Image (cartoon, rainbow, N blue to C red; front, side, top):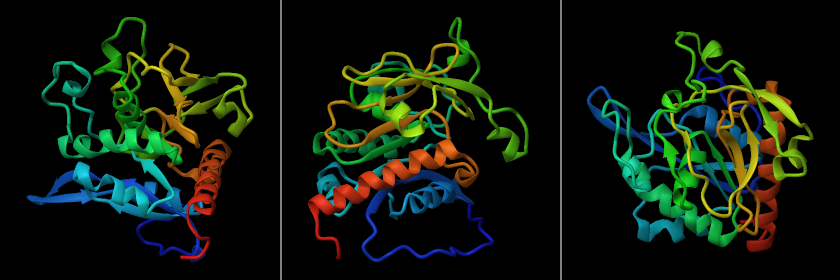
Length: 265
């Protein structure tokens, strides 16, 4: 993976697909910023696509954004989906929220599914997709009887925070199983929210040992769709499972490009 001190080494071909990348809203030194983590941007490049960061969008603009893209990448975030969107009350007001992001990613996901565009959602992205399609979330998995604490370890080292934490059991014959070719593997875990009620029509692709949904696909979408609760973007090149997911997403974006626009722009 690239770091902030190393420039990008491998250029993408001019006709590589374009992928929309969701941005978050943060305050930095008293100023509002809209940003996407470099690890997500680099993951899209590893998939063989140009990352197009969407800072935010009015719902009326979403079709225009999607018209210029060949896939959508829903990033993770430190913020949580606001529970009012799935009919809940905010239980912990100290938790980070991002209502600006909620306002456009939720309707965009519905449009992506309706179009059948390639969709890859990570961590918060999985939670957003579940809510957008009619599901709900636990606001704090660690407070639910029988469920484990899925939050990152309290350590300043990112390698420890993003270290492999628990296994996931893959549903045999499912989309994820077809991509990675494994019945189980180890993942990192950095989330407090998690799926409570799975949205109607979604297909579970993997669960953690305590039963939490760790991956799902969207069968009603005509194209590639996969959302995972872990962070495959973290040091992707060192993890064959992560690379398999990114490569499958990239292949789907190239197929969408070829089917919906000329190969050369």
